[in-house]
Image 1: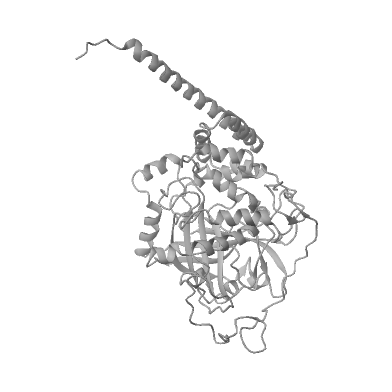
Image 2: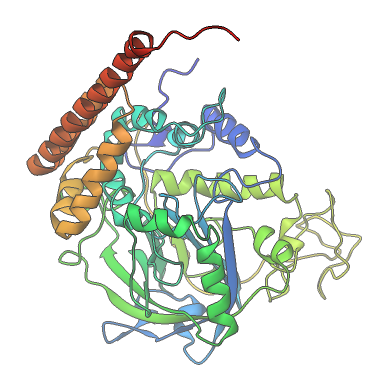
Amino acid sequence: MVTDNQNTRTVGDRGPMTLENYDFLEKISHFDREKIPERIVHARGTGAHGYFQSYGTVNGEPISKYTRAKVFTETEKQTPVFVRFSSVVHGKHSPETLRDPRGFAIKFYTEDGNWDLVGNNLKIFFIRDPLKFPDMIHAFRPDPVTNIQDLERMFDFVSQSPEAMHMITFVYSPWGIPATYRHMQGSGVHTYKWVNHEGTSVLVKYHWEPVQGIKNLTQGEADKIQGKNFNHATQDLYEAIEKGDYPEWELYVQIMEDNEHPELDYDPLDPTKLWYKEEAPWHKVGKMVLNKNPENFHAEVEQAAFGTGVLVDGLDFSDDKLLQGRTYSYSDTQRYRVGPNYLQLPINRPLKNIATNQSGGQMDYRQDYGDQNDPHVDYEPSYISGLKESENPGREHQPYVEGHLQREPIPRTNNFGQAGETYRRLNEWERKDLIHNLVSALSDCRKGIQDKMIEMFYQCDQDYGKRVEDGLKMAMNKMKSQEDKMDQAVDQAEEMGHVSDPY
C-alpha cells in the first residue's frame, strides 16, 4: 500500500535515501522501461566532441584546496569530452523551437575514468523528490488515450506541486526557448560535493556560460523559425563546427561549506532553488571547446549514455534527494535502452582501461580483460589471481548521518520566494512574454486549475498574479464572445438560408 506518493524514505527529512525504498525502485524501474528504443526523456538531441581544460584555481587559490580530482588539478592537460544537447519532454523528431528545458550533458574522458555531468540549460528543476518524477513526465507528455499534448494535464500537476512555480516562471519566459544550443547556458542543477586529499568536502554547483553570449526567443519568434526549419539548432551547431567557428563555454562553480546553512531561507540541497551570487560568488575554473562533429549520429549521439552516478575520485554526491534518485534511474535506463554492457560501446568507454568482474549479458564483446586479470578468476577476493582493489588516492570522505527513517519533505521549502524574485529580475519584455505564454496555456484549462495557479502566482509576486489573472479574464471573455458568435452563426444559418427548388 502506497501511503505517501510525494516523499521518498530518507534518514531524517534531508538525509540520504535508503536502498529499501521499494515503492520508489519499482515505480522508477518501470518508468525507465516505458518506451523502446527511444529515450523516455531527452529523445530529441544532437552532440559534438571537444575538450575541457582547467584553470587550476578558485578565486586565486589552488583548486586542490577543494578537490583532488585530476580533471581540475592538472591544468596542462586537455580532457576529451563529448556533449549531448537535447530537449526533455518531446519526441525524437520534434521541432527544436518547442518550449522545454534543454539537456546539457557532458562526458569527461578523464585519466581516472569517465565523469558525467548531466544537467540542463536552466539551473533548477520542477520537483525535489524523485518519487514524483514519473508522474511529472506523464503529466507533461501527451494524453495516453488521444496522444495529444494537453497543457491542462501539465498545469493540473503543477497546481498541486507548488515547488514547480520557480521552474514554470523560467520555462514560460523566453528562457524556455533558447535560440540555439551554442547560445545557451548549462548547469549541473544539483548540489554536488568536492573532496580534497584530507577527505574534507565542500558543496559545489556547476555553471556553463557560453562565450558566444546568451540568446533566447519569444514565442512569436520561435513560431516563425519553426515554420521554416524544425532542425535549426542541430544544423546551427553542426555547421558552426564544420566551418571552424568552435563554440566555447567557461565553467564557473559556486562553493559553500558542507553544512545545512540555517542562515538561508532555503535548503542549499534543494534543486528548485538558485544559490544567488550574493550568497555564493561565481568562480571561473575552466573552459570547454567543441571542435569535432560526430562521424555517425547513431553510434555516437544516440548511443551516448549518461548517468549522474558516473563520478571520479575527488567528486562526490550530496544528499539532494532528486540527485540520488536520478543516480539510480539514469544508469538503470541505459542498461534497458542500450543494453547491460552499454559501457563497452566506444562512445561510453573510458579512455583509461577499466577492469571489472562484471561479465555476460547481451552484447558482451570484451576481449581485453586487463594485464592483472586472470580470465579464470572472475571474483574477488582471491588468493590465486584476479583483480585487486585500487589504492585510495586520498582520505575517504565520511559524512556523518543520523536520524529516523521517514517520509517527509525538507523543512525549508519556501516554494514561492525565489519564483517571485526571478519574476522581478526578468526584463520587462521577458515578463510580457511570460504572461502572454502563461495566459495562452492556461486558457484551455478548467477554472479550478486556473484559480489555483493564479493563487500561487500571487504568492510569488502580487504583480505576477494580477497580470496573469487580468490576462486570463480578457482571454476567457474573448473566448466566450467567440463561442457566442459561433452559436449565433448556427441559428443564423437556418434563418438566413434561401429556399431553392430541387434539381
